[in-house]
Length: 196
Image 1 (tube, helix red, strand yellow):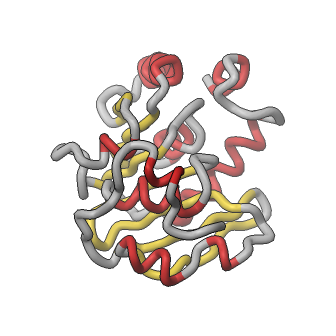
Image 2 (tube, rainbow, N blue to C red):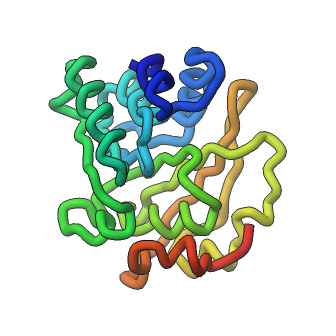
């Protein structure tokens, strides 16, 4: 399925095995059980990989693009994962306000969703207090990308780095709820809370 995602342009170039290995790195940042949302699921990385390697997790694949969601639904059916993996077609800023999704997740994963302030703001509404955001990051991470003051404004604690030879990530715990976030569609990208 990931090879098909690549052929359709939903997954970047390079070996599919490399994409899978990188996505598997993120598993170390996830809780033992519960609900996980893939923010901007696109071609299914890391969400489909998480679902494949961690069958105890309930996974929601969120993407705003109709074509990507059509592919994701086909992938979920082909992998016989319909009972524990769902696809939601919506903008993150709107979906995070839905009663069935707001504060409903133990973790949010993101890979190539957007710059740090956009990713953090769009993710925070999905997380319950005590949940965590796990974001794929370059190996030479600049700590200034995730400033403590910016994260605190959203209700997050400090970012902690993790990973290994196949990929790296940051894990950021949500310490408190704040109904202000996320702002309206497009606002997090147009007026980010910090520069990264």
